[in-house]
Amino acid sequence: MTQPKPPHVAFFATQLPVGGVQRMLVNITGALAEKGWRVDLVLVRKEGEFLKLLSPQVNVVDLGSPGLLKTTGRLAAYLRAHKPDALLATGLHRNVFALLARSLARVSCRVVLSERVVVSRYGCWRHTRLQTGLFHAVYRVTARLSFPKADAIFAVSEEAARDLERYAALPDGHVKHIYNPFITPHLTVAAHEPVDHPWFAERGRVPVLLSVGRFDKQKDYATLLRAIAQVRERREVRLVLVGDGLERGAIESLRDELNLQEHVAIFGFDTNPFRYMSKTDLFILSSIYEGAPNVLVEALGCGAPVLATDCPGGIREILGAARYGDIVPMRDADAMATAILAFLEKPDSAKTERFLRERAHEFTLEQSVTAYGGLLIPGAQ
Image (cartoon, rainbow, N blue to C red; front, side, top):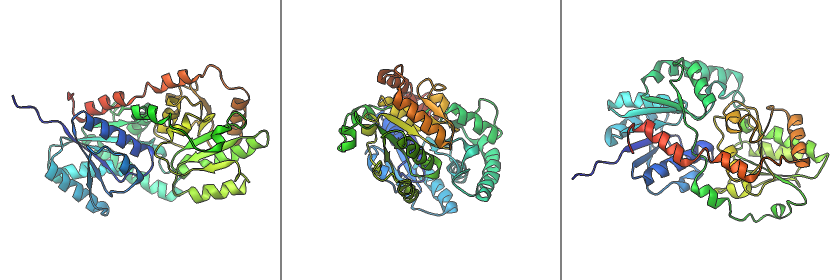
């Protein structure tokens, strides 16, 4: 008896630098390939630190860093040559390119679109008001014209899904929500790896706080640093930042301006941030917008207490309206400092490591793989 061909799916992204979307791609593509699916990762540019984390079973296709118009043409050529059963686009302009490429290729490939942020807030703090206005003027019209042609659309949180429906004038309930594959078997193992830094050995004497993420204006590390400066007026505390990005110079300059050189350590990019999460006294997310922040659930999965800003993008969903972590207003260093001091003075005894880990395990890789597979190839096992 002839064995049926395994599903052939493609994921379309720009590149694989440090970031939550990129970690999602590593996790999802690897898990689907392990199931026996044929998985291609189609990149505009084959670049980024997370390339080395990809499963060897995932085939990376490099479109060769073309311009915008050439990207669509080369993606169409890929679809004609390889004929995947489904193509998943990873948000924003990539969604539009995927739909255009299918039209150009004249293939029957199923196209699934996704959004990774609360799209109506995208760019609000990253670009000038004029740049942001122009982006949304173009993208909103393009989305309203093209998105109805997609076979399926999802966002990474309920909040982001409803926002996209309003933004693209889609019917209520048209956009599904699938949480990112936050909790993986690798995370559990990696969290137990040691940290070779004296601060973590001295946690009983001086608390160590942690933030992990791309150094970008979206993450608003400036507010976090100002909050730490206020906390240090009352008590000893240390902060570790794990990540890298375009804003690193600005973050280092503000740290020095606030005289925090001896109290804030910048570790740079680390493929295993989980070992820090499992050993911190408090994990802090200071963002001004998100989609569904991976690091927040990953920190919970490592048993870390968390503090997050009340930014658009699934924070309240993940934290159960503050049941699983404290929430403070965005861009408010005073409120953040007050919450940090309150936690350090009297941690919530109800939020045990086991309690936090149980919450995180509602967002497992297995659940995400099932949901992704169902949208990409309905009925496939």
